[in-house]
Length: 389
Image 1 (cartoon, helix red, strand yellow):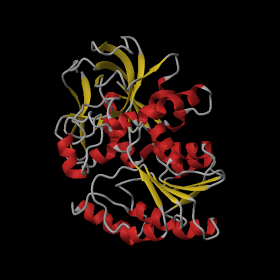
Image 2 (cartoon, rainbow, N blue to C red; image 1 turned 60 degrees about the vertical axis):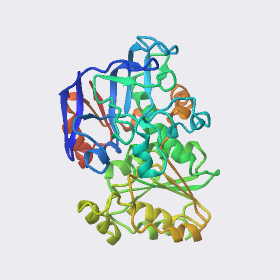
Image 3 (cartoon, rainbow, N blue to C red; image 1 turned 90 degrees about the vertical axis):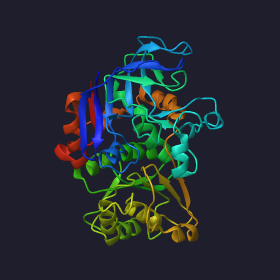
Image 4 (cartoon, rainbow, N blue to C red; image 1 turned 135 degrees about the vertical axis):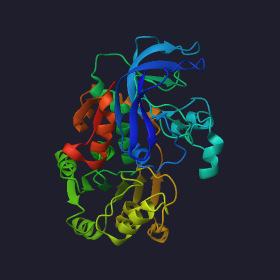
């Protein structure tokens, strides 16, 4: 089959690789009909995620048609259309029973590797390094899905791929991030990062009762899309973010603040951001937590910080003293996608939201290397790329 393979920083190639096969009775094989490039894929593309190996198949936003199932998969059959969560969960461990699926205790075969870096292992992830299980991703023609009796969400109607594909990751991620803001009716929520996750977080914050959403970015088309969803916007290239937020909130600060950017935050003309960029370029640091610092400093006293943005290692000079003395609550983590998929599918089916609003480009899988460059550099007004094998 054809698949997009990683070979190093800035080097991905569409190659012919062996077709996946059933390796366990709970496996399924799906033929990919749509997959997408995620902002967190750029952390792999840019070389910040450790334990990648040459030839690894990327992609964790996947859906398609079931072509084969293992003997213990009774909920699916060949011909079913499914959306696949980006994280892999057994459904039986302590964490899965508590609906914390991204913390599954059993799905990462390389758990010991992750424990050395984090103290404990999260769940396995599709196409996201060997520390996260070494599973092949779905930017390919076919995908092996472990624990298929638990993960894939079956679609019972002819709804278009583009409306449901993002149930695999970015819609649940934006929704859980907004939920983690503990929004009270009428609250003001500030969201750093207007990429696809930020866009879904904006929509979700309003769904959960926010009175105001303030969106922060410097890409005009992203800010325009955020404004179209009802957000007030700040271009961090034009104004000081902290000062502007204080002006907009009578000096109190937003009730909750969200870092939907993560480890590759842009400097925004600031000294700390510039130092972050220099250190990561010289491989003296793994993360650029410029946005996280801003989020902590701007959030009102007693407020809540939500972090859906991906971090991979160690952040420097994070103002933990400010967070403690201001009494901030910090909620974060990989998304428990399995928990949110059925509920969010219902919202799509009821017409409350059409997730395809973020799609700007649909390209063949063969054009994926060029699409990665376009997405990374925000060329051609690119916000979200869907790949069609």
